[in-house]
Image (cartoon, rainbow, N blue to C red):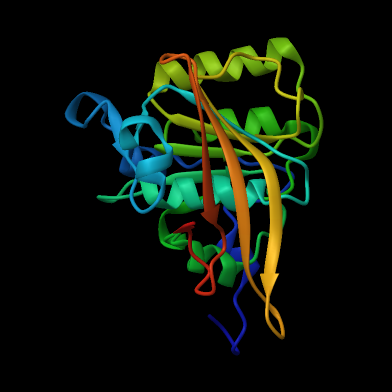
Length: 227
């Protein structure tokens, strides 16, 4: 914090051109898969939305939405609720999500690595972070190629990271373990916009189930709440 303004250079891990993640940082924050649970528990209303209230390490979660319907908020809120006990997160391709909004969502910015504008190098940037994070949020700039998407998903499984992809319908060609589709979104207001109601369709590949949930994101405090 300097001069009353937040330094974006400090907030973001790096911008293009993209240097490698320092080896000492990787060693410090590398997830210790064998010493930790194979799943990440999520808190708040997400514990009721996500099957069993847990995200399995090595899984891919697709947040499917139109660009204006809150997909980024869903992904960041989900990551925040999974970042307990000193876990780390990476956020790739989400441009200027807003410092205050992310803090309101519950993200601890001291344990988040950002790559805001990777352009065509988004997949390489995401892969660079896999050794140092537990949750990785990615927003590709356009439809991902099927080979590239599969390779990233394969590496996520190998590293035991939870990958959360924010994409429009039919723009992520690889298989996913969990899908959160934003079917409806509208703002509730008095004299100003105070909260956004989301209707989510949740599909689980393992369970072969589809359920529908309603949440408020953000609520008047900027967090997620049950409907």
